[in-house]
Image (tube, rainbow, N blue to C red; front, side):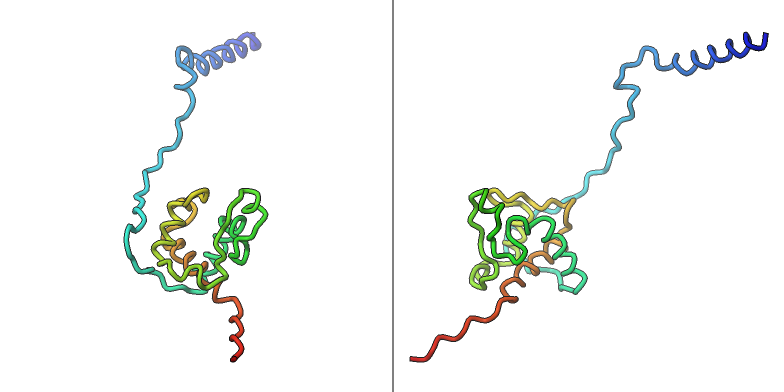
Length: 157
C-alpha cells in the first residue's frame, strides 16, 4: 500500500513538472538574453578639440596597459611599427619613436583614428576603453618620441 501511494505521488509530481511545458516551443522555455540599456556613445570630435585630460602616473599606467593589449602587436612595444604581424599583413606603420612622425597630427586627430579605426586598424570600442582612457592613450603614444635619445648635433664645418 505504501509503495502504491509513493508511486502515485511520484507520477503526480512528474505530471505537474512536465505539464506546464507541453504545448510550448523550445524558444518559449529558454530564458531570453539579459537586456542592457544602450550606452550613449559620444561621436569622436570632428574638428579641433583640445585633449581634456591631464596625465597622472595612474592614467598613464592604464594607457600603457591598454596599449600593450590592443596596440603593441602591430605598432610594437616601443611604437616603432616594426613587428612581425605588421610585416605579415604587409603594413607600413608610422614610427612613433621619430618626433617628426606625429608633429603634424593634433591630439583630436589621433583620438579619432584610435576610436574609429583607419584602413586595416580596427576601432577601439567604448567597451574596451573609455574616452578618457583613449585621450590618455594619445598622450602615451606621444611619449614614445620623447623616450628616444636626442640626435647628435651635426659637426660644424
